[in-house]
Image (tube, rainbow, N blue to C red; front, side, top):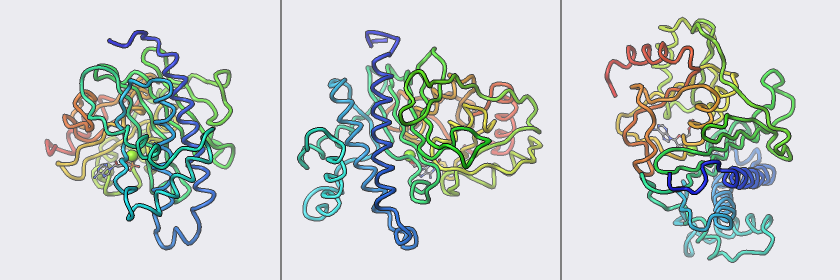
Length: 340
Ligand code: AMP
Ligand code: MG
């Protein structure tokens, strides 16, 4: 590994700071801009403003502490450029400047957003960022996540998920919300409160120990375009699962498996040509591994983060606790019958 220290203490702390800050940006936008009217008109502009704002803020913090690290981020500044992008750009600039110590110019903010254009690949260090994963969940006031991970020499070494709407305890769905999950390679996975938690608040988390799939719960995307609900129903039948699937947006599904709220996460390709994006899976991947769970694609191959911006060597994603993982993959293979 080319990175000087394999302990990643500074990387962990900075990634947490960046995710907390970006989560605040998203929550502020939700409070101010997501209204009944937005929802009925299906106006997505609030989530767009929050997406750009969150990417600018994370990249600002990463640049301050790790100026040489490139970033693979979901967004670029194209839609904010020129006269056409003026209205949106002004909203993003206003938003970012509510949280920075010194006001930043709009050019500076666009430059920060475009720090996310790195191509990725097998050598050296880079970060990968999804400023708002689960945009539909965000607009509905349901699950979304700010996702940041560090990849060194093609492997995920640090992952942080900010989940502002995730209940802190599964059995208290109306109780406290806001969870941060963090994992560093070889150091376990932890949960803490998203805001103000601090290191003393961290609790080690584990995937479930369920050993019979009859007792298992699985989760999947809300959006039928992102996963085949039909295939997952057939897989569930083969596994004798009787509990209804838990549908939620974003990498909160990884969080649910990592702390044992659910036992399985199925993401089954809708189109063979779709390539999963590294920012949609990197943080969740290490959090599952460090919680004692397993993750592969639908063919049982590890997710390969070394290729570039997409997981072009993989199809779909399966995560589960280690006890039932092989059984789940067998059922996936039987159901998909070599389609991918
Ligand atoms: P989820 O909230 O788990 O449904 O996933 C949200 C992510 O799905 C977004 O960040 C997109 O990058 C990604 N996505 C978009 N189109 C597809 C697709 N056809 N198949 C799988 N994932 C997709
Ligand atoms: Mg995403």
